[in-house]
Image (cartoon, rainbow over all chains, first blue to last red; front, side, top):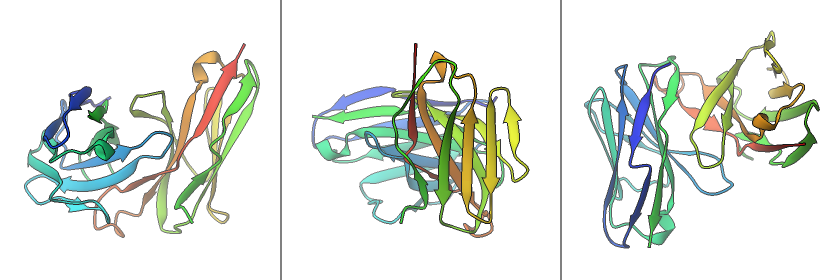
Length: 115
Length: 115
């Protein structure tokens, strides 16, 4: 099946710094990419939806100025956690789809620990 | 009320047992339904789609009852390797979301298969 590559898999950063997570679709063009966050023992929560070449649509309660999403090409989307705090420590996972109604493929996820 | 509700478990069963998971969803505009499997600290992986007519894939059987807004997953002859968290996932009608595939995840049901 299609592959979505996400990295880094693990990152530890200091409080106040910024961290960038990349998500690449390797063998398909992802017109839409989704970013999720999952806290321990909780479900995946959609943070934002991005369409290539346009601004991301953020879910209610997600700060767009803190979680910067860029989807500049059909194969790459990035999530930057700015001014990270310990409460931002979580599992961040991206997914991509070629278009509405198409199968969604998940990246391997990124574990962020802010110390 | 959560959009997708599941019994969190854990379900501890002996190898070879049959186990059933249930899920209810609240949004009647939900159009597509899936079961995903998530191993500890990994990304979710699609197990199977769920159709009104019911569908089977080897030891796994999924059922959908639209009238009751209820989804089920049955695992027969469970294996140690089936130990994971099973996520019930629904996709709202893409016309409602404006063209995006908006997956809503349940919190998952944890299964532990033991010798």
